[in-house]
Amino acid sequence: MSADSLPLQNAPALPVLDAVAGRRSIRAFLATPVERETVRHILDLAARAPSGSNIQPWKVHAIAGEARAALSAELLAAHEAGEPEVPEYPYYPESWREPYLGRRRAVGWALYGSIGIGKGDRERMARQHGRNWLFFGAPVGLFFTIDRDMGKGAWLDLGMFMQNVMIVARGFGLETCPQAAFCYRHAITARHLGLPDGEIIASGMALGFADWSAPENNFPTEREPAEGFTRFTGF
Image (cartoon, rainbow, N blue to C red):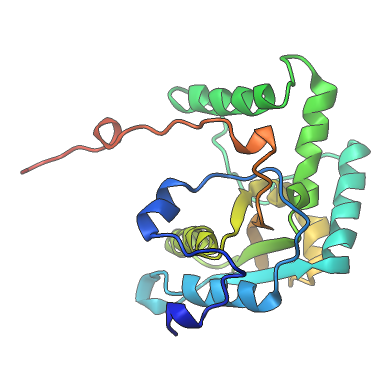
């Protein structure tokens, strides 16, 4: 499959370095529809991700239209009713420590600050969190699942596949937001997707065209430079 054969929906393809450097989690999307064929092409290309012994353990459930709306409505209702969120697997550590706690707090306050939510404003924080269930307005929701009996290596494979999806999407003029939030309301989402008991939701993801006028899409997020997390030996 050549790049020339892929429909880019009138958006220029990005050089790969720009696609990686400019990737960010988008939290406000336009309602502009995304064609099924575009989603399929993204997933076809993303499937070039490596996996141990080429087992390709990832599975994807893509929803749009009435199916997406119905799922969002039930999830948002559960959120607004204060129903507890029960994670299917431990995404975060049981106790926080530095430098991870500081990084987490920094990005949280940067997000809230960009949309005028002050410390202690729990009501508005809850409303913002509730936008997860609406895919932040994106027309397409992707769910990445994996069989429960897969080992940790297969989860690494799934992560590389998801990263490919996020980068390839930018080549089509689209943006994404990976959403672990859906793992916390697994039962509702699994029922809507018709998942068997042996399949677990690793992550959701919003996919669509970014609303670049929204302030929550424009606050900076810092990254540790390579010198800070790499030990160079023998260079």
